[in-house]
Length: 307
Image (tube, rainbow, N blue to C red; front, side, top):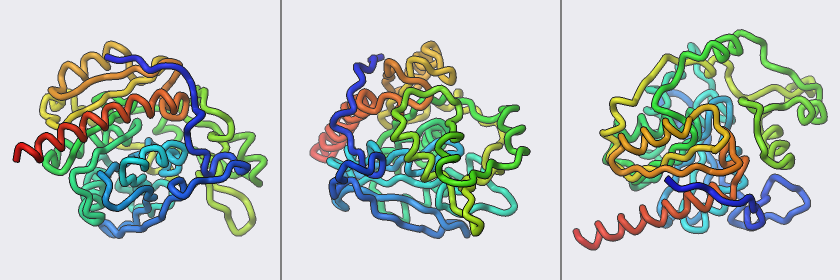
């Protein structure tokens, strides 16, 4: 396994994060809605339509704009899509609730088909990483690679999330209160404040009375237990497992186990990062993933030549 390096965010896009910085054209995403299984799913797109595709999947209670600070860097070489999972961001809520892993997996498949994405690499954080693994197992012929960020092979069963689901969502009087009260889960992060403030602003919707409410459906916080450990040996595409050095979700031992079980996997630990790896240490994360993506593209090109 590799180990991520120093903190250096100098070359990353600041589009939408720091207002005083001028955004580059590649940093401005295009917005799409796709009707899937009766649900309007929202996604953002960066990059050229002819470039190799990436599909970014956020974690639970998050949204597509979590990727805004690094998606433009990926878009230098890829066509990048960031999806709002059902019940999150600008995507529709489902009544009665249908937020199981299988629902997300089915949505990912329909989105890939609707956008005509040829064997995209899926990059998923936390819940999104689990969904990416489950999708790669369900439709291996449609996936070019996986990047799984700080999630193990087991998901669900959290008492805290079941309790949180029953608590009324917070209401913020105005943006100032939002910025002062907004926190990530888990709360530990070393992400820069402008980035956290950007995520906070994109996490809420203004109400008629001027107050701000979270976009995420609280029903999406809870799902059944799923365990993919016995199936990791069946993931056939190139895979990168990423762990934050300070993560409490994925131990160093679990990372080694996952790499061992998955036949085409490698692992990387990002120094100075917790669960929110790509927020805490975006430069080191980007460097590790881009190195992996170059290998994936090289393997794909070699296969095409051989055929």
